[in-house]
Image (cartoon, rainbow, N blue to C red; front, side):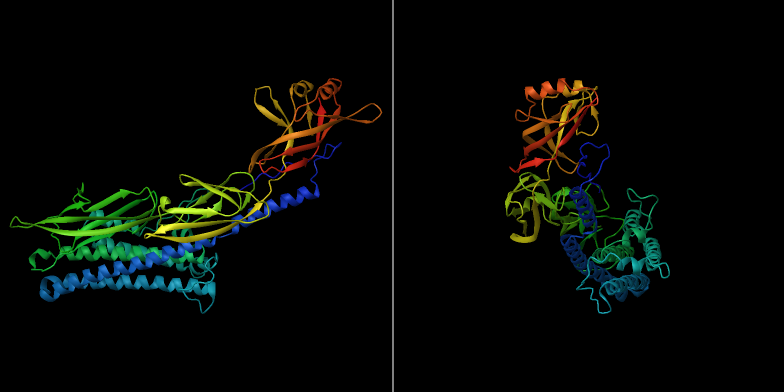
Length: 532
C-alpha cells in the first residue's frame, strides 16, 4: 500500500524544493507506520484461524465416525455373506489403510512445523509462536528436503486411487476437485505458483496448521465417498437388514460467504438402480443424485432437514428422515481502521468489524472516547478527545447469549495541518489548486476571490476554514508592505496591490489561520506567489 506524503513547503525566495527537519520526521513516520501495517499480523486474525482449526478437527472426528459406520456395515455383510461381501470389505480395508497413512503423515508435518516455531517441546495443541511466518516454509519448501512437494505427490496418488474406485462420475469429480493440487495463479504475481508454495509460503504457523486440518477433512471426505461407493456396490438389497440410515455428506461444513455449499444426501445400502426421492425443507430436489446445493449470502449457522422416500419391489415406500447444518464464515475476523492504525479526532473514521460464523445482525460494538455508529455492515468511529485511547469492544450473539469477542484500542490523534492554496480553473474549466513555487498568470490571480486550505494527501481529504491571512509585498526599496485579508477573501487593498504587480514579481501569503472539523485553530505555513 502506498500513501502520498504531505506536500513539501518551499523555502521563501528559492526555486529549490527542500524538506524542513519537521517535514522529514513526518515523512519518516508515515514510512514506518506503513511498514508496521504490512508486517503486523493481528491477534484477532490468529484467533480466527485457531477457531476454524478447532472446528475442522471436530468435523474430522464426526466424519471419521461416519466412515467407521460404513466400514462396519461392509464388515457385517462380509461376515454374513463372505463370498459376495469379502472382496468389497478387503477393498474397504485397503482404503482405510491408505487413508490413515496419508492422514497421519499430515499429523507429523503439523508437529514438525510447530516444533520449528516453538522448539523441540512445541505442542500442536498450544502453539506459542502462532504468527511465525518462516516455520511452515522451512519445513514444507526446503529445496534440500521438499516435504511440500512430497505431500503434493502423495495427494495426487491418493486422489487417483480413490477416483478409480468411484463409479459415479459426479462423485468422482467432487473428490477430484476437493483434493486438487493444481498450480495457483495469484493476482499481481507473474506465473502460477505450485500448490505447496501457495499453501505454505509466508504463512503464519496457525494458518499452515489450519490448512493441513482442512486437507485432512477433505481426505476423510474422500474416504467416506469411496466407502459409500463400495457399500453401494455390494447390492445390499440382497441382504435382509433391520436398519437403514440416511447420511448427509458435505464437501465441507465450513464455507466462506459467497461460496457454494454442496452436500450429497445418500442412503447407505441403497440400490444404485433405484435411487430414493429426496426432500429438503419440504421441497423435492431437482436432481436424482441427492446433491443439495445453494449459494450462501450471509454469515451464521443454518439448519436444514428433510427425508428420503425409498420405493421397494412390492410397491411400498419407506421414509427416512435426516437433518444437518452448515456454517458460513468470513475469511478472517478483523477490527481495523480503514484509513490507518490510528483514529483522527473530529472526523468520521471508517471501521470494519466482522466475526467469523456470526451473521452481521448478531454483531454489536461500542467505543469509548467518542461515538461508534453503524450503517448496514459498515461502521463509523467519531473520536472526541485527542491523546486518549478509543477502545472498541465487539460482542456477538452466539447460541442465544451475548459474548465479548474482541477489544481493540486505537490512538486518537489531532488532524495534520492543512496546506493553503489559491483555487482556480484551468483552460479546460477544471478546478485546480495553486500551492506556490511556480508562476501563476496575473489573470488567474485577479479572478481568485481568496485562499482555501485542505489536507489532500490521498490518505485524508479534508477541507479547513480559513479565518484570516496577510499578504506581504515589497516596494522598490525592499520594504515589506503587509495587507490584511477580509476573512478568507482578498481585501480590496490586496487586489489593488495585485494590479500593480509586473511579470516576475512575487509576494507572500503569511499568518494564515485556519480551523478544521476538530475545532482546533492552527497557524499554517506561508505561501509564495510568483506572477507570470
